[in-house]
Image (cartoon, rainbow, N blue to C red):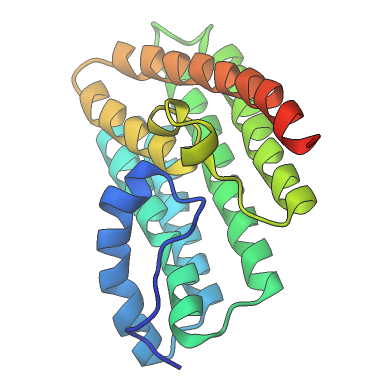
Length: 220
């Protein structure tokens, strides 16, 4: 066991994870590893924070939802860091972490759609937007997980998709932009709707691009 020694980053980390999230999560994972917290306990904490974010978004407390979801994204890296610090990585821990990440993100999209549906301005368009956003994020995440199961390595988004890596290809950047949009939506709810619409469109483009480039890379 070495709570302070190993490298904490992963090859699949996006730019927000590398530049922001890891700098914060490392301050939690070290003390938590020394205190005996398990990786799965950290995953459960990230889930609870994400549930709080969803509740805030559904209640149209946009800024709180965005900040809580960003903190959940930060904390979602703590479990893996504890595992690498303590040598307690497990297949189930990886599975549980992935399931929670997807659950929190999808529930967040649904909560935003619900919150927008309660407004007079976007009540008719909120759920169609939510469906398109859920479909896009699901397909993008599923393609990355399928790459990992076939190639036995994390999907290297920064290597394969350098532009999209800074836009929408990773959960870390999508959540970060949603947090910024949510704070701005406190003053104008239109920012929430159009911000999610732009992210959704970019995710669809990213998925099409990924399918195109992986054909050549995975057939070699």
